[in-house]
Image (cartoon, rainbow, N blue to C red; front, side, top):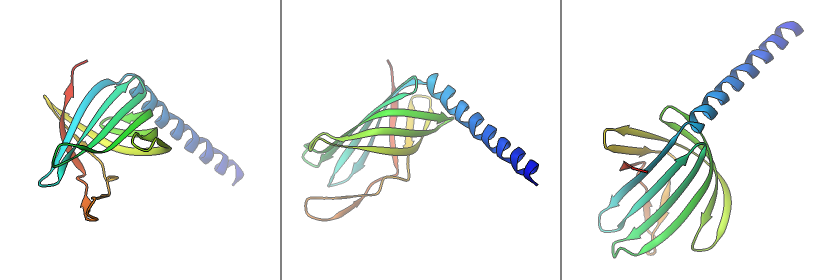
Length: 148
């Protein structure tokens, strides 16, 4: 029985190691830039810019009100694993207005087709507006890949 458990543990370890290796290799060979946007009629819009550079990620999120003034600004700096169109991110999140920083983990998909792209995440949640209304954030942001 002990021999079986040892072999099972080795198999699980090798499987995890293989999976991590694929994610790391794919991330190290990834270089790209994207810009995504989403509209909220009568309320405003949001813009997410991402830069992937050989395993490192930089994201900037800007939320605008209907008068085109920035109401929220966040920066993310970190590392990522990539599995096809699925990205797993571990990053430092900085609220640029209040200078608060925290460690965050994110998971999302980027689907690219010709000159269009879509950012898909189920970790979006809600935003509370200044008049205390809940705004459900869109799980899909549309955009495009950028050159450079």
